[in-house]
Image (cartoon, rainbow, N blue to C red; front, side):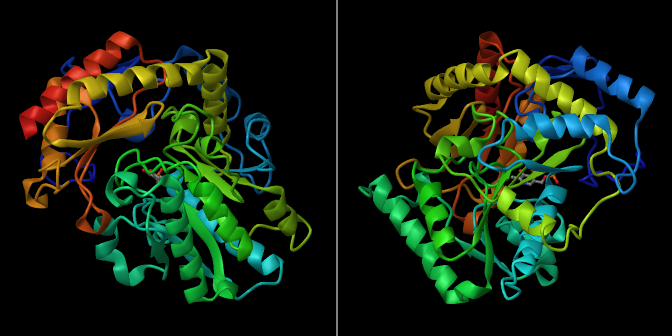
Length: 439
Ligand code: PLP
């Protein structure tokens, strides 16, 4: 009997005791190919000596000094490293402990910006139905994952939600990308008008949707059109790259591929790659400057922000990724993975869509390919695939249909950036057996 309050109160979990490269090892010695890094966390794989050494060295000299009193060397160096590589003027980097904290910080920073520039009526957020931004109350409020929201509905702040950019489900037959983009931009525009533009603060979105529907990338041009609508109404654009950022899609920041620069961007999982809990919020010069030249103080903070050991770990991770050319490997092995998924599932009667960018891929499962009908949720397909995969020695990230009950179950694949071709083949082979065994 465990005294750990686990996510589920039923059943028991294998005990993870070690990790080597793309594999995790449990206490019985069983090896699991880490095909999703939990949820897109372990981008460097497990047991990397340079990262372990950097963390040990930092803890040996200084683990923690409160940021109300001191700064520390790893935080300063990591911020400069990231600012040198971030798009546009997103040069002001605020460190926290994970994705939900990053989401909260972003919402509050956006609000404070509006106060600093004398627009106090702007307090409404608009987000998308197909989205997940974290489990804390503010982050959950902007998120569109209904299953996670429902128990807490009465506690959430009032956020308006518009349609996601979800070509497989929502792009009309014969509708061009340009027409689809124009339709979604018009919907956002109409929602801002409905709320009253003077009350709208920011639009929040994931460049490539992660957990809610599985690696859904927008059609090209979508974010440029959204940016234009936001700018026209003085609404900020906040992009959530907690899952899709830090190289996962084949560029350091996912939004680079959509040719858009937000006002605020935040990232987490791949930043510390699981070696340390850390997230980062990037504020543009416009936002940071308004606070610097206004009240001079961001009314937010956490005890563990810019934690020295966390920053040292993340800095080591990012230096290895850059030094070893791992983002090039994401693009190369991403293509290999895409081809292998098409080969294995392209004609599968229950796989409706195969999609994603880089090493951020997914298959969407359907009861019927022609009608795109979803499986009955009571079949608990995602749960059964997860269990089958674990039996096979594969960690993948299945999710159930969530967007207004319309999208199907899916399986997200997000292996470490160090993955090789033979391991991609092993991953897809095991996934195929897990999916077929669960259907
Ligand atoms: N935003 C996105 C896009 C995520 O995928 C997640 C976590 O899965 C979060 C935010 C929340 O991050 P965390 O679990 O670190 O709080």
